[in-house]
Amino acid sequence: MLNWWSGLTEDNQIKLLIVPITAFLASFGYLLKKLFDKKQQSTTQTLTIQGDTNTQTTNGGTAVINTGSGNVSMGDNYHIGVTLEQYEQGLKSREIEVREELKQAQAKDRQMKEVELQAVQQQLQNISTSYEAHIVSLKERITQLEGLSGQLPDEVLTEAINALAQDKSHQADQLFKQIEEQADTVIKVAAEAAYQRGLIAEDAIHYTEALEHCEKAVRLALENILYLNQAGEINQILANYEKAIEYFELALSSDLKTLGEAHPDVARDRNNLGLAWQSLGEYQKSIDYYALALSSNLKTFGEAHPAVATSRNNLGLAWYSLGETQKSIGYYELALSSDLKTFGEAHPNVAKYRNNLGEAWRSLGEYHKAIGYYELALSSNLKTLGESHPAVATNRNNLGLAWNSLGETQKSIEYYELALSSDLKTFGEAHPDVSRDRNNLGVAWKTLGETQKAIDYFELALSSNLNPSSQLFRS
Image 1 (cartoon, helix red, strand yellow):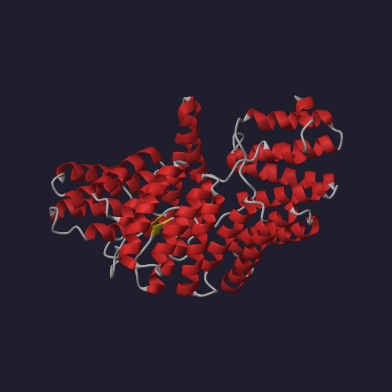
Image 2 (image 1 turned 90 degrees about the vertical axis):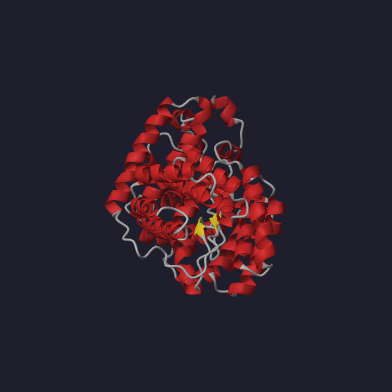
């Protein structure tokens, strides 16, 4: 094994265990940005979105859902009865459940279970933001259900809403199942019930079930943008990118007809399409969509807005993937400058853009510049996210890569070991980031001539049979 491995360059060794950013990061973006997106809705006096990082206000992640509502109550007539502690406990229980399912999963089901496990872990790592976003989502869904008043018996609708408000997911799902089955002749009601069941399944990180329900909602009400975007989002999470593109294109076509070119929802749809095409490696297509989204967002929001910064970051990522590193740096710098003015130093977006600038400069051989950006990103993330966050481990991993490139191998090992220690505590043995950290430690020890240590780390990295995530951060 060592002879084969030694024949590869260091970059190729690392690339063997690095894959493109997948729907997992889409899910991660969803958790980090959803709350911010909702708060932006209140400032614009519209209720237009519910979903991922790619929203009316940020346009950065995967699918976002347009509710199409006007003046609404956001479900404020109902008390949301789930506490942060209960929400966290539910996620921890689901994590244990998925781990057990993963142990017993057949080969064809393992990828799905790995995606679900990663999603649960990311929610637990960002528990406060995830919880607040969940509460906002529940209120929005209650508002949608209130719109069905008069189309269902009041007692059934009230019971379903109360179950949702108390986050009694199984009870709510059973009630919506009953509504769905009894409302076949009232297509709008059946579609809404199917959609609500999809959201409940997504909350519980049961993505296959969520997809079945959301696609049924689309079949029953093809014109509903909310359902189209939700179906696209779940397909994106499951890496069904071609199918996601179909739904996002239908949403874009509809929004263009009803809202026109210069509307945030149209920009959102184009950003969704950009992300899906980028996931397929069609970087030029993704750039075309991102550029249209950026142009629209600039007209709508102006320079100093998170939506504009996110569009620029996504353009930077796409150009970087095409090898146009200087062009990507230009977009990253604009995104960083904007969000520094908006959020200040201690914000995850600012750290993310600095990390991406570090990656770009490192790829150009400007290692000291890269280290400067990585250190700023690390300092910021330590303050805002704490020691045990995956972003902190990734910053340290990237610092290790840069110092190793400068010949400071011992220093690189110190960073890799910190990253590995953190990722082991966070994710356990069988996780892509743990595999990445061990691989990089193997490369470093090989450089120092410690052959046996290198072999040990390479074998541990390969034994998990997982691929590590990219060191770039999407919005």
